[in-house]
Amino acid sequence: MAPYLNALAGSVTAISQDGEDATREFVRQMDIRFPVERDPGFEISKKFGVVTVPTLYVVDDQDRVVRAEPGFDKAALNEIAAMLGHGPVASPYDGAPASKPGCSSRHLEAHTEDASAEALDLHSKRGRTASVIEVDEDAVEYCYRVFGDALPVVPPTVERVEAMIGGLDPREVIARIPPCYGEATVEKLAANAVMAGCEPKMMRVLIPLMRAIADERFNAHGVQATTHFAAPLIVVNGPVRAELGFHSRQNAFSNVARANSTLGRALQLVLLNIGGARPTGIDMSALGNPGKFSYCIAENEEENPWEPLHVTEGLTKDQSAVTLFAAEAPHGVSEHKSRTARGVLKAIAYSLATVWSYRACLTFEAIVVLCPEHVRTIHRDGFSKKDVREFLFENTGVPLRCYEEPGEGVEQRTMYKEIFIDGERCYQKFRAPESIKIVVAGGTAGKFSAVLGSWSTGPRGSQMVTYPV
Image (cartoon, rainbow, N blue to C red; front, top):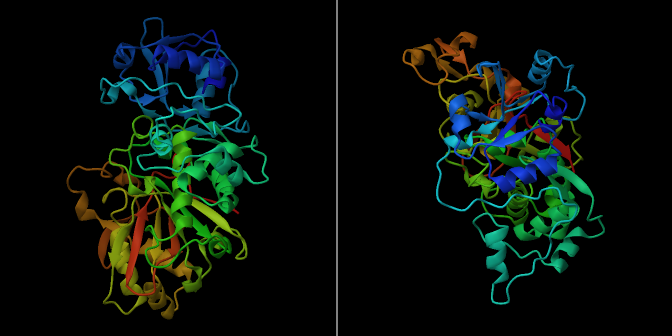
Protein backbone atom coordinates (compact mmCIF):
# COMPACT_ATOMS: atom_id res chain seq x y z
CA MET A 1 0.00 0.00 0.00
CA ALA A 2 2.70 2.51 1.03
CA PRO A 3 4.43 2.83 -2.40
CA TYR A 4 1.09 3.65 -4.04
CA LEU A 5 0.20 6.20 -1.38
CA ASN A 6 3.63 7.82 -1.85
CA ALA A 7 2.41 8.77 -5.32
CA LEU A 8 -0.44 10.65 -3.63
CA ALA A 9 1.80 12.50 -1.13
CA GLY A 10 0.26 15.87 -0.38
CA SER A 11 -3.24 14.42 -0.40
CA VAL A 12 -2.75 11.61 2.13
CA THR A 13 -2.32 11.36 5.89
CA ALA A 14 -1.84 7.95 7.49
CA ILE A 15 -2.91 6.93 10.99
CA SER A 16 -0.77 4.35 12.81
CA GLN A 17 -2.13 2.13 15.58
CA ASP A 18 1.42 1.08 16.58
CA GLY A 19 3.72 2.55 19.20
CA GLU A 20 6.09 5.42 18.50
CA ASP A 21 9.21 3.29 17.92
CA ALA A 22 7.43 0.76 15.71
CA THR A 23 5.80 3.53 13.68
CA ARG A 24 9.11 5.32 13.18
CA GLU A 25 10.79 2.08 12.07
CA PHE A 26 7.94 1.29 9.68
CA VAL A 27 8.21 4.75 8.10
CA ARG A 28 11.96 4.23 7.69
CA GLN A 29 11.76 0.74 6.21
CA MET A 30 8.93 1.61 3.81
CA ASP A 31 10.39 5.02 2.81
CA ILE A 32 7.06 6.72 3.50
CA ARG A 33 6.81 10.25 2.08
CA PHE A 34 3.48 11.38 3.51
CA PRO A 35 2.53 12.39 7.07
CA VAL A 36 1.97 9.54 9.55
CA GLU A 37 0.17 10.35 12.79
CA ARG A 38 -0.24 8.02 15.75
CA ASP A 39 -3.49 6.95 17.36
CA PRO A 40 -2.29 5.87 20.83
CA GLY A 41 -5.72 5.69 22.45
CA PHE A 42 -7.45 4.48 19.27
CA GLU A 43 -9.70 7.54 19.40
CA ILE A 44 -9.42 8.13 15.64
CA SER A 45 -10.01 4.42 14.94
CA LYS A 46 -13.14 4.49 17.10
CA LYS A 47 -14.36 7.73 15.51
CA PHE A 48 -14.25 6.22 12.04
CA GLY A 49 -15.47 2.80 13.20
CA VAL A 50 -12.46 1.06 11.70
CA VAL A 51 -12.93 -2.71 11.38
CA THR A 52 -10.19 -3.61 8.92
CA VAL A 53 -6.59 -2.42 8.69
CA PRO A 54 -5.73 -0.96 6.27
CA THR A 55 -8.83 1.00 5.34
CA LEU A 56 -8.69 4.02 3.03
CA TYR A 57 -11.07 6.86 3.88
CA VAL A 58 -11.81 9.78 1.57
CA VAL A 59 -13.14 12.66 3.70
CA ASP A 60 -14.52 16.05 2.76
CA ASP A 61 -13.80 19.46 4.34
CA GLN A 62 -16.20 18.70 7.20
CA ASP A 63 -14.46 15.40 8.02
CA ARG A 64 -17.36 13.42 6.60
CA VAL A 65 -16.50 10.08 5.00
CA VAL A 66 -17.14 10.19 1.26
CA ARG A 67 -15.74 6.73 0.56
CA ALA A 68 -14.26 3.86 2.60
CA GLU A 69 -12.24 0.99 1.11
CA PRO A 70 -11.12 -1.81 3.47
CA GLY A 71 -8.06 -3.89 2.58
CA PHE A 72 -5.94 -3.38 -0.52
CA ASP A 73 -7.52 -3.09 -3.96
CA LYS A 74 -5.72 -1.66 -7.00
CA ALA A 75 -8.91 -0.69 -8.81
CA ALA A 76 -10.18 1.16 -5.74
CA LEU A 77 -6.80 2.88 -5.32
CA ASN A 78 -6.92 4.18 -8.87
CA GLU A 79 -10.50 5.36 -8.45
CA ILE A 80 -9.56 7.22 -5.26
CA ALA A 81 -6.53 8.71 -7.01
CA ALA A 82 -8.87 10.03 -9.71
CA MET A 83 -11.14 11.53 -7.02
CA LEU A 84 -8.06 13.41 -5.73
CA GLY A 85 -7.14 14.65 -9.20
CA HIS A 86 -4.30 12.19 -9.83
CA GLY A 87 -3.70 9.67 -12.57
CA PRO A 88 -3.57 5.89 -11.90
CA VAL A 89 -1.08 4.86 -9.21
CA ALA A 90 -1.38 1.05 -9.46
CA SER A 91 -0.61 -1.05 -12.52
CA PRO A 92 -1.95 -4.60 -13.01
CA TYR A 93 1.55 -5.77 -13.96
CA ASP A 94 3.71 -4.27 -11.20
CA GLY A 95 4.21 -7.55 -9.31
CA ALA A 96 1.65 -6.90 -6.57
CA PRO A 97 -1.71 -8.72 -6.42
CA ALA A 98 -4.92 -7.07 -7.60
CA SER A 99 -6.30 -7.12 -4.07
CA LYS A 100 -5.71 -8.41 -0.54
CA PRO A 101 -7.90 -8.53 2.55
CA GLY A 102 -6.82 -6.63 5.65
CA CYS A 103 -6.45 -7.59 9.31
CA SER A 104 -8.67 -6.83 12.29
CA SER A 105 -8.26 -3.29 13.66
CA ARG A 106 -6.11 -3.27 16.78
CA HIS A 107 -8.68 -1.37 18.86
CA LEU A 108 -11.00 -4.38 18.51
CA GLU A 109 -8.45 -6.75 20.07
CA ALA A 110 -8.28 -7.66 23.73
CA HIS A 111 -5.51 -5.65 25.41
CA THR A 112 -3.25 -6.62 28.28
CA GLU A 113 -0.52 -4.93 30.30
CA ASP A 114 2.19 -6.89 28.48
CA ALA A 115 5.07 -4.88 27.01
CA SER A 116 4.92 -4.16 23.30
CA ALA A 117 6.94 -6.43 21.03
CA GLU A 118 10.08 -5.08 19.44
CA ALA A 119 9.78 -3.83 15.87
CA LEU A 120 10.66 -6.62 13.45
CA ASP A 121 13.63 -6.18 11.14
CA LEU A 122 12.35 -8.38 8.34
CA HIS A 123 14.55 -7.11 5.53
CA SER A 124 18.15 -7.61 6.67
CA LYS A 125 20.31 -9.33 4.08
CA ARG A 126 21.81 -11.91 6.43
CA GLY A 127 20.04 -14.11 8.92
CA ARG A 128 21.21 -14.14 12.52
CA THR A 129 22.36 -17.75 12.63
CA ALA A 130 24.20 -17.47 15.93
CA SER A 131 23.39 -15.34 18.94
CA VAL A 132 25.48 -14.37 21.93
CA ILE A 133 23.68 -15.72 24.99
CA GLU A 134 24.49 -15.62 28.66
CA VAL A 135 26.81 -18.34 29.89
CA ASP A 136 24.24 -19.69 32.33
CA GLU A 137 21.37 -19.71 29.81
CA ASP A 138 20.48 -22.99 28.13
CA ALA A 139 20.69 -22.76 24.32
CA VAL A 140 17.48 -24.75 23.79
CA GLU A 141 15.57 -22.56 26.26
CA TYR A 142 16.95 -19.42 24.61
CA CYS A 143 15.86 -20.53 21.12
CA TYR A 144 12.48 -21.63 22.47
CA ARG A 145 11.95 -18.16 23.92
CA VAL A 146 13.28 -16.12 20.98
CA PHE A 147 12.62 -18.19 17.84
CA GLY A 148 10.20 -20.98 18.73
CA ASP A 149 6.49 -21.62 18.42
CA ALA A 150 5.63 -23.17 21.84
CA LEU A 151 7.62 -26.37 21.24
CA PRO A 152 11.35 -26.78 21.82
CA VAL A 153 13.61 -26.22 18.82
CA VAL A 154 17.07 -27.35 17.77
CA PRO A 155 19.56 -24.49 18.37
CA PRO A 156 20.64 -23.16 14.94
CA THR A 157 24.38 -23.09 15.54
CA VAL A 158 26.75 -21.87 12.84
CA GLU A 159 27.88 -25.44 12.13
CA ARG A 160 24.35 -26.81 11.79
CA VAL A 161 23.20 -23.95 9.57
CA GLU A 162 26.24 -24.21 7.30
CA ALA A 163 25.63 -27.94 6.92
CA MET A 164 22.01 -27.21 6.00
CA ILE A 165 23.05 -24.58 3.44
CA GLY A 166 25.46 -26.95 1.69
CA GLY A 167 26.74 -25.38 -1.51
CA LEU A 168 23.94 -22.82 -1.85
CA ASP A 169 24.46 -19.06 -1.74
CA PRO A 170 23.43 -18.04 1.80
CA ARG A 171 22.61 -14.47 0.69
CA GLU A 172 20.19 -15.43 -2.08
CA VAL A 173 16.65 -14.17 -1.39
CA ILE A 174 14.25 -17.01 -2.22
CA ALA A 175 10.99 -15.21 -1.40
CA ARG A 176 9.39 -12.51 0.71
CA ILE A 177 7.28 -14.25 3.28
CA PRO A 178 3.79 -12.97 4.13
CA PRO A 179 2.21 -11.51 6.11
CA CYS A 180 5.04 -9.02 6.87
CA TYR A 181 7.06 -9.89 3.75
CA GLY A 182 10.38 -10.55 5.44
CA GLU A 183 13.18 -11.60 3.09
CA ALA A 184 13.73 -15.36 3.21
CA THR A 185 17.39 -15.77 2.34
CA VAL A 186 18.84 -19.26 1.98
CA GLU A 187 20.62 -18.71 5.29
CA LYS A 188 17.44 -17.76 7.16
CA LEU A 189 15.58 -20.71 5.67
CA ALA A 190 18.42 -23.01 6.71
CA ALA A 191 18.30 -21.68 10.28
CA ASN A 192 14.57 -22.35 10.53
CA ALA A 193 15.01 -25.78 8.95
CA VAL A 194 17.63 -26.61 11.59
CA MET A 195 15.27 -25.50 14.36
CA ALA A 196 12.51 -27.70 12.91
CA GLY A 197 14.78 -30.76 12.88
CA CYS A 198 15.11 -31.09 9.09
CA GLU A 199 17.91 -33.01 7.46
CA PRO A 200 20.06 -30.96 5.00
CA LYS A 201 18.53 -32.73 2.00
CA MET A 202 15.16 -31.18 2.93
CA MET A 203 16.34 -27.82 1.53
CA ARG A 204 15.57 -29.33 -1.87
CA VAL A 205 11.84 -29.20 -0.98
CA LEU A 206 11.85 -26.24 1.38
CA ILE A 207 13.05 -23.76 -1.24
CA PRO A 208 10.23 -24.41 -3.77
CA LEU A 209 7.82 -24.54 -0.84
CA MET A 210 8.84 -20.97 0.04
CA ARG A 211 8.12 -19.87 -3.52
CA ALA A 212 4.69 -21.47 -3.21
CA ILE A 213 3.90 -19.77 0.11
CA ALA A 214 4.83 -16.40 -1.42
CA ASP A 215 2.64 -16.98 -4.49
CA GLU A 216 0.01 -14.25 -4.43
CA ARG A 217 -2.63 -16.72 -5.58
CA PHE A 218 -2.26 -18.61 -2.30
CA ASN A 219 -2.56 -15.34 -0.35
CA ALA A 220 -0.61 -16.40 2.73
CA HIS A 221 -1.13 -12.87 4.08
CA GLY A 222 -4.86 -13.45 4.36
CA VAL A 223 -4.51 -17.05 5.53
CA GLN A 224 -2.17 -16.02 8.35
CA ALA A 225 -4.21 -12.99 9.46
CA THR A 226 -7.74 -14.38 9.25
CA THR A 227 -9.92 -15.23 12.25
CA HIS A 228 -10.82 -18.50 10.45
CA PHE A 229 -9.37 -21.94 11.27
CA ALA A 230 -7.25 -22.39 8.13
CA ALA A 231 -3.58 -23.40 8.14
CA PRO A 232 -1.31 -24.09 5.14
CA LEU A 233 -1.50 -27.81 4.32
CA ILE A 234 1.43 -29.24 2.34
CA VAL A 235 0.81 -32.19 -0.01
CA VAL A 236 3.95 -33.87 -1.39
CA ASN A 237 3.88 -35.80 -4.68
CA GLY A 238 6.27 -37.60 -7.00
CA PRO A 239 9.58 -39.45 -6.58
CA VAL A 240 10.76 -37.12 -3.80
CA ARG A 241 8.37 -38.93 -1.45
CA ALA A 242 10.52 -42.04 -1.41
CA GLU A 243 13.82 -40.21 -1.87
CA LEU A 244 13.38 -38.12 1.29
CA GLY A 245 11.24 -40.51 3.34
CA PHE A 246 7.82 -38.84 3.21
CA HIS A 247 5.06 -41.04 4.62
CA SER A 248 1.70 -41.52 2.90
CA ARG A 249 0.15 -44.59 4.53
CA GLN A 250 -1.38 -45.18 7.97
CA ASN A 251 -1.38 -42.14 10.26
CA ALA A 252 -0.84 -39.92 7.21
CA PHE A 253 -1.77 -36.79 9.18
CA SER A 254 0.12 -37.88 12.29
CA ASN A 255 3.67 -37.77 13.65
CA VAL A 256 4.87 -40.95 11.94
CA ALA A 257 7.69 -39.63 9.73
CA ARG A 258 10.50 -37.14 10.26
CA ALA A 259 10.20 -35.78 6.71
CA ASN A 260 6.49 -34.88 7.02
CA SER A 261 6.76 -33.48 10.53
CA THR A 262 9.90 -31.39 10.05
CA LEU A 263 8.96 -29.92 6.66
CA GLY A 264 5.57 -28.88 8.03
CA ARG A 265 7.16 -27.40 11.13
CA ALA A 266 9.87 -25.62 9.14
CA LEU A 267 7.14 -23.84 7.16
CA GLN A 268 5.41 -22.74 10.35
CA LEU A 269 8.66 -21.47 11.90
CA VAL A 270 9.41 -19.50 8.71
CA LEU A 271 5.94 -17.93 8.87
CA LEU A 272 6.60 -16.98 12.50
CA ASN A 273 10.24 -15.88 12.38
CA ILE A 274 10.49 -14.39 8.88
CA GLY A 275 6.87 -13.66 8.01
CA GLY A 276 5.99 -12.28 11.46
CA ALA A 277 2.74 -14.28 11.82
CA ARG A 278 2.75 -14.80 15.58
CA PRO A 279 -0.45 -16.08 17.23
CA THR A 280 -0.17 -13.33 19.85
CA GLY A 281 -0.30 -10.62 17.19
CA ILE A 282 -0.93 -10.80 13.46
CA ASP A 283 -2.36 -14.33 13.46
CA MET A 284 -5.92 -13.63 14.59
CA SER A 285 -7.44 -17.12 14.28
CA ALA A 286 -10.27 -17.39 16.82
CA LEU A 287 -9.60 -21.07 17.62
CA GLY A 288 -6.56 -21.96 15.53
CA ASN A 289 -5.70 -25.34 14.07
CA PRO A 290 -3.31 -28.08 15.28
CA GLY A 291 -1.88 -27.95 11.73
CA LYS A 292 -0.13 -24.74 12.73
CA PHE A 293 2.48 -26.92 14.46
CA SER A 294 2.96 -29.03 11.33
CA TYR A 295 0.59 -29.89 8.47
CA CYS A 296 2.18 -32.05 5.80
CA ILE A 297 1.09 -35.26 4.07
CA ALA A 298 2.25 -37.20 1.04
CA GLU A 299 -0.11 -38.75 -1.48
CA ASN A 300 -0.26 -42.54 -1.49
CA GLU A 301 0.28 -42.77 -5.24
CA GLU A 302 0.89 -46.53 -5.09
CA GLU A 303 -2.74 -47.06 -3.99
CA ASN A 304 -4.11 -44.44 -6.38
CA PRO A 305 -5.61 -45.89 -9.60
CA TRP A 306 -6.04 -42.38 -11.06
CA GLU A 307 -3.60 -39.57 -11.79
CA PRO A 308 -2.12 -38.05 -8.60
CA LEU A 309 -2.80 -34.51 -7.45
CA HIS A 310 0.22 -32.87 -9.10
CA VAL A 311 -0.71 -34.39 -12.47
CA THR A 312 -4.26 -33.06 -12.12
CA GLU A 313 -2.65 -29.66 -11.47
CA GLY A 314 -0.63 -29.75 -14.70
CA LEU A 315 2.70 -31.48 -13.91
CA THR A 316 3.95 -34.84 -15.17
CA LYS A 317 3.88 -38.01 -13.09
CA ASP A 318 7.69 -38.30 -12.96
CA GLN A 319 8.03 -34.78 -11.50
CA SER A 320 8.11 -34.14 -7.77
CA ALA A 321 5.89 -31.40 -6.39
CA VAL A 322 4.58 -29.58 -3.34
CA THR A 323 1.01 -28.30 -3.16
CA LEU A 324 -0.33 -25.75 -0.68
CA PHE A 325 -3.98 -25.59 0.38
CA ALA A 326 -5.42 -23.36 3.12
CA ALA A 327 -7.18 -26.08 5.07
CA GLU A 328 -9.29 -26.60 8.13
CA ALA A 329 -8.51 -29.61 10.32
CA PRO A 330 -9.55 -32.99 8.80
CA HIS A 331 -13.16 -34.07 9.35
CA GLY A 332 -13.31 -37.85 9.38
CA VAL A 333 -15.84 -39.82 7.32
CA SER A 334 -16.48 -43.43 8.38
CA GLU A 335 -18.29 -45.65 5.86
CA HIS A 336 -17.76 -49.38 6.43
CA LYS A 337 -21.09 -50.77 5.28
CA SER A 338 -21.57 -49.50 1.73
CA ARG A 339 -20.37 -51.75 -1.09
CA THR A 340 -20.86 -49.24 -3.92
CA ALA A 341 -19.12 -46.11 -5.12
CA ARG A 342 -22.37 -44.20 -4.80
CA GLY A 343 -22.81 -45.24 -1.17
CA VAL A 344 -19.27 -44.23 -0.19
CA LEU A 345 -19.44 -40.92 -2.03
CA LYS A 346 -22.88 -40.05 -0.62
CA ALA A 347 -21.42 -40.36 2.90
CA ILE A 348 -18.62 -37.99 1.90
CA ALA A 349 -21.09 -35.56 0.29
CA TYR A 350 -22.98 -35.19 3.56
CA SER A 351 -19.75 -34.13 5.26
CA LEU A 352 -18.88 -31.77 2.40
CA ALA A 353 -22.21 -30.02 2.92
CA THR A 354 -20.97 -28.75 6.30
CA VAL A 355 -17.75 -27.13 4.97
CA TRP A 356 -17.26 -23.56 6.30
CA SER A 357 -20.85 -23.30 7.61
CA TYR A 358 -23.77 -25.56 6.80
CA ARG A 359 -25.93 -23.00 4.98
CA ALA A 360 -23.11 -21.09 3.26
CA CYS A 361 -22.40 -21.99 -0.37
CA LEU A 362 -20.04 -21.12 -3.25
CA THR A 363 -17.19 -19.21 -1.58
CA PHE A 364 -14.85 -22.04 -0.59
CA GLU A 365 -13.27 -25.31 -1.76
CA ALA A 366 -12.42 -28.64 -0.17
CA ILE A 367 -9.92 -31.47 -0.32
CA VAL A 368 -11.31 -34.98 -0.04
CA VAL A 369 -8.67 -37.42 1.21
CA LEU A 370 -9.78 -40.89 0.15
CA CYS A 371 -8.42 -43.91 1.97
CA PRO A 372 -7.29 -46.90 -0.15
CA GLU A 373 -10.23 -49.12 0.86
CA HIS A 374 -12.75 -46.51 -0.26
CA VAL A 375 -10.73 -45.94 -3.44
CA ARG A 376 -10.91 -49.64 -4.31
CA THR A 377 -14.70 -49.65 -3.91
CA ILE A 378 -15.10 -46.49 -6.00
CA HIS A 379 -12.70 -47.61 -8.73
CA ARG A 380 -14.27 -51.07 -8.92
CA ASP A 381 -17.53 -49.40 -9.94
CA GLY A 382 -15.75 -47.75 -12.88
CA PHE A 383 -15.45 -44.21 -11.49
CA SER A 384 -12.64 -42.02 -12.80
CA LYS A 385 -11.23 -39.15 -10.71
CA LYS A 386 -13.31 -36.77 -12.82
CA ASP A 387 -16.39 -38.89 -12.12
CA VAL A 388 -15.73 -38.68 -8.38
CA ARG A 389 -15.49 -34.88 -8.46
CA GLU A 390 -18.63 -34.54 -10.57
CA PHE A 391 -20.64 -36.95 -8.40
CA LEU A 392 -19.66 -35.09 -5.23
CA PHE A 393 -20.43 -31.75 -6.89
CA GLU A 394 -23.85 -32.87 -8.07
CA ASN A 395 -24.78 -34.56 -4.77
CA THR A 396 -23.56 -32.00 -2.25
CA GLY A 397 -26.13 -29.42 -1.27
CA VAL A 398 -28.15 -27.88 1.52
CA PRO A 399 -31.94 -28.43 1.64
CA LEU A 400 -34.03 -25.29 1.15
CA ARG A 401 -35.90 -26.10 4.39
CA CYS A 402 -32.70 -25.22 6.30
CA TYR A 403 -33.01 -21.55 5.32
CA GLU A 404 -36.21 -20.77 7.19
CA GLU A 405 -34.39 -19.03 10.07
CA PRO A 406 -31.66 -16.33 9.91
CA GLY A 407 -28.07 -17.54 9.91
CA GLU A 408 -24.77 -17.48 8.07
CA GLY A 409 -25.28 -18.00 4.35
CA VAL A 410 -28.98 -17.20 4.37
CA GLU A 411 -28.63 -13.63 3.08
CA GLN A 412 -26.68 -14.83 0.03
CA ARG A 413 -29.21 -17.47 -1.05
CA THR A 414 -30.32 -15.42 -4.07
CA MET A 415 -26.91 -16.19 -5.60
CA TYR A 416 -27.19 -19.95 -5.04
CA LYS A 417 -28.21 -22.49 -7.67
CA GLU A 418 -31.20 -24.65 -6.87
CA ILE A 419 -30.89 -28.37 -7.65
CA PHE A 420 -32.60 -31.63 -6.67
CA ILE A 421 -30.73 -34.22 -4.58
CA ASP A 422 -32.61 -37.48 -3.97
CA GLY A 423 -35.86 -35.71 -4.81
CA GLU A 424 -35.34 -32.81 -2.40
CA ARG A 425 -34.83 -29.18 -3.42
CA CYS A 426 -31.37 -28.03 -2.35
CA TYR A 427 -28.89 -25.26 -2.96
CA GLN A 428 -25.71 -26.51 -4.62
CA LYS A 429 -22.79 -26.24 -2.20
CA PHE A 430 -19.82 -25.63 -4.53
CA ARG A 431 -19.24 -23.40 -7.55
CA ALA A 432 -17.87 -26.18 -9.80
CA PRO A 433 -16.53 -29.76 -9.68
CA GLU A 434 -13.00 -28.30 -9.70
CA SER A 435 -13.70 -26.80 -6.26
CA ILE A 436 -13.37 -30.33 -4.89
CA LYS A 437 -9.79 -31.67 -4.86
CA ILE A 438 -9.11 -35.41 -4.59
CA VAL A 439 -6.09 -36.92 -2.80
CA VAL A 440 -5.45 -40.58 -1.96
CA ALA A 441 -3.69 -41.19 1.36
CA GLY A 442 -3.76 -43.42 4.41
CA GLY A 443 -3.37 -47.07 5.33
CA THR A 444 -4.83 -50.01 3.46
CA ALA A 445 -6.91 -51.18 6.43
CA GLY A 446 -9.88 -49.13 7.62
CA LYS A 447 -12.62 -47.39 5.66
CA PHE A 448 -11.96 -43.88 6.94
CA SER A 449 -11.66 -40.93 4.56
CA ALA A 450 -11.57 -37.22 5.39
CA VAL A 451 -12.90 -33.86 4.25
CA LEU A 452 -10.84 -30.69 4.67
CA GLY A 453 -12.62 -27.41 4.13
CA SER A 454 -10.83 -24.30 2.88
CA TRP A 455 -10.56 -20.65 3.77
CA SER A 456 -12.37 -18.20 1.46
CA THR A 457 -11.38 -18.77 -2.17
CA GLY A 458 -11.22 -16.78 -5.38
CA PRO A 459 -9.23 -13.59 -6.17
CA ARG A 460 -9.70 -12.17 -2.64
CA GLY A 461 -9.25 -15.53 -0.94
CA SER A 462 -6.75 -18.36 -1.25
CA GLN A 463 -6.24 -20.57 -4.29
CA MET A 464 -4.43 -23.91 -4.17
CA VAL A 465 -0.95 -23.75 -5.74
CA THR A 466 1.37 -26.54 -6.92
CA TYR A 467 5.12 -26.06 -7.47
CA PRO A 468 7.63 -28.53 -8.95
CA VAL A 469 10.51 -29.68 -6.76
